[in-house]
Length: 170
Picture: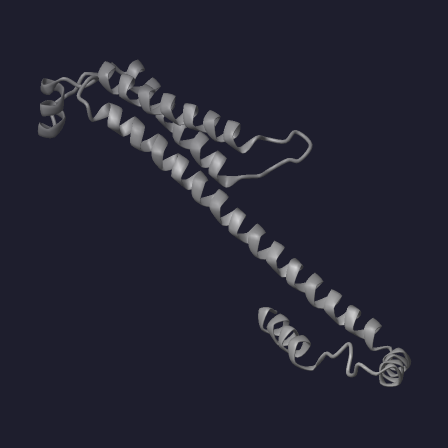
């Protein structure tokens, strides 16, 4: 479409003459000729169609770009939430050095520590889900089915379930 608009502009600059002479008779004849052929109306119609089509394509491109950016930010939000959760677990605040050695060696571990770890993961997951809903600005009039939201809730729910199992079986 941009090529068509460029060719139209080249046509306008090269071949569209609104005046061909300084003499009154030639100017009047040229004006009558343009009026009989309807050149001004045709020119305005073609120009309007080209601009309308170009604006439509530009808005479509912009909406696609916006949708891609939204998807990318949602995926990044999940990544940040998981990174924060596992970063908090990686600081060895919840697991002591003995607990980590027992996990590596395959010895029985303290179920309370596992329950706390999965609770931390679930907490970060649900916090991330809340932040995603807040940033997206949910509209109550439009029901949105977003699989990413269910994925985040599923991870949080699984972490809570594992925390409960570890707590009960300690």
